Length: 179
Image (cartoon, rainbow, N blue to C red):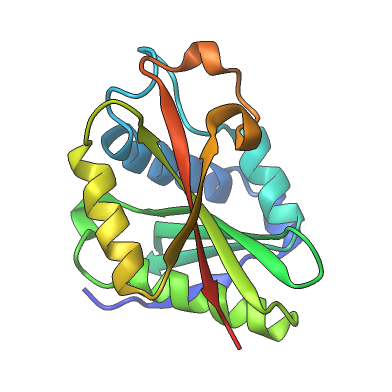
């Protein structure tokens, strides 16, 4: 299926409940699979308020197919030279279609246009075992040119409280030079 549009959402779109809800649905569904077993039952990755704020920040990209939002990515500055790439998600029925790759490329282009030299992302992984979806994602990000630069403790990066974790986890911190 061709991507009919991959674009940066305007801050005004944060008021469009349909847009916000579609993005929340895509992210939560993708993370439910990608982080299965890492969180306590009932946990969801995001909510309407967080996504509306991400849109208002001027850093949320969305991919649509036939007018329906099927993927997203969020860019936010860390410092003058580095930006975080987060919330990279695609509707499961579109996995393998190139939407994720297109969103990461669009996010990197946005970072470059803002003078960012390094893209960074964090991948939550369990400490005590391999997680098939995390291994798939690690390989995917590596193929896109990202390299693990360090391992970080959960509470060093996460805003959520660790008690919501169902198993001990840490973050693999990836970076990619954009210039």
